[in-house]
Image (cartoon, rainbow, N blue to C red; front, side):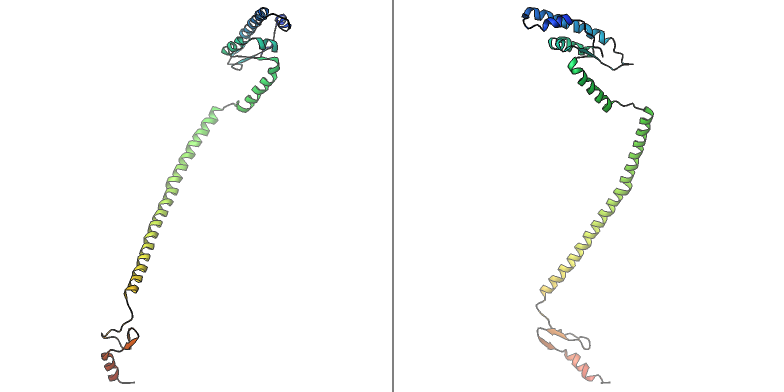
Length: 205
């Protein structure tokens, strides 16, 4: 950062209220040339190996107000031109940015961290493939088998309901039945004649 200034006389004349336009333009050009000279001097201080990649030239506020082209050209030389009133806020802003983003990187630690990250990614992929995917397959198979079992149960219950709906009532079979068995038809109870004959012939103990 550099803040030396020598053209104080030109700035004092620019501050006079009754100054004509021609004289004002002449003094403004003189001030701008002085700013350009200071920018060239300050740019020589820049050494990327030991300094920041840019320099700061601080000039009087009156000079900053009358020169515009010199400020733009200074940027091409990596020199930032600011007035006295803006110097402190500008420096505080740079300091805040430095504290927030400037970090010293240890390449060995960075390489070690990258290797560890790659190893952990491999472990994560193994967990997803061998455990999570396998569990999902087991769950899918169980879901499929459960759906099949429930479908069979539903089909059986529906078949029973259809059979009940097809029988109009209870009936008695005239075919031979076992001893003591009685068939029904409606509300009438009949016994097979064969069953009664056998019942009469059997000795009573």
